[in-house]
Every structure is written in structure tokens, then in C-alpha cells.
Length: 196
Image 1: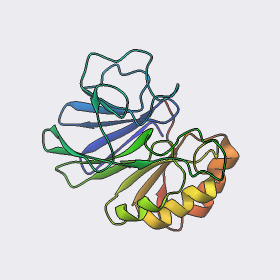
Image 2 (image 1 turned 90 degrees about the vertical axis):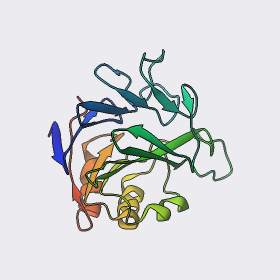
Image 3 (image 1 turned 45 degrees about the vertical axis):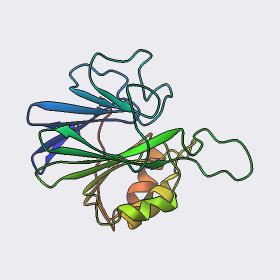
């Protein structure tokens, strides 16, 4: 599937983990290396495949450039769209991690139509996700297990969040998508979208 419309918002993917949310003639792009056609760019962290080498000439919200954001912040993006910045990080089991706490974020984007979209960023299954339970209608969740949640952990995130729709990103191959879909499908509708 290339795109879907849910509660008046057109939702599509772009790249490894990118999402495009189009509402009221404006496009909010999350982790899109190619920000063409975007009105606003949100970046969860500064890694290749998630952010461009140079900032686009549009409003940027990220933990590393543009309007610097941190977990707990709530912002108005215009047209009644609200942004809540949430935690995203890897849990250390004694060694170095690719995404230490404080280096990246996730986003909860809320539209006037009532739609609430969560983009987890590059994260493990973290305790802060429980704070979003009942506040997410559609979730973009990484599933590759490569410095992010694996399919089993992403399915556990679905059980915690209870979104109506879950879109896997940062896939890591068809076998991981199948595992995620099998484990998550009892709790949500899993929609596989092409990265475009």
C-alpha cells in the first residue's frame, strides 16, 4: 500500500522510516531524508536514513538542529495541529548503544480531526511508552532489531499502546515483517506501506 487516509489525514511513507502526514494542504514529514513537498520537517535523530545532510528551507523540529526539542515539550504547528515530543532511546545492557537516552526523540502529532499519530523514532521498547496508552490511533514502529525494537518488542509496544493501526518501519526484511504482523495483528490492524 502506498498511502491511506484516516480521519481526514493522508498518511504515507518515504524512505527507511519516514512518514508524511498531509492535512489541510500542508505536509508534515517525519524522518524524511528527502523533504521535497514538505511544509514542516520533524527529525527524531541525526543519523543517515533519517535526516538530510543539509537542513531544508522549511521549519524544522528536532533534537539536533532547527527548533531544538526535547521530551515533554508540547508545540502548536499551525492549523490546529499539536506536537508532543516523547522519549526514544536504546536500553544499555552494559555496553555502548546507537541511540543513547537524550540523543533522539519520538513524536505524537495530534490533528483537529481527532487523529493521533505516534512516530517512535529509533527506540527500544521503553517504559515511557505506557504514558501514551490510549493516546495513539496510528503508530509508526521500528521492527528490524538493529538498534531498534525487534518484531517481538514492537508487538509488545502495540499491546501497550493499543493503536487502531500500526505501520512497521525500519523493517529489516520480509521475515521480520511477517513475525511482527503475526504477533501484533490480534491487537491492531497492521498496514504494510511501501517506503516510496
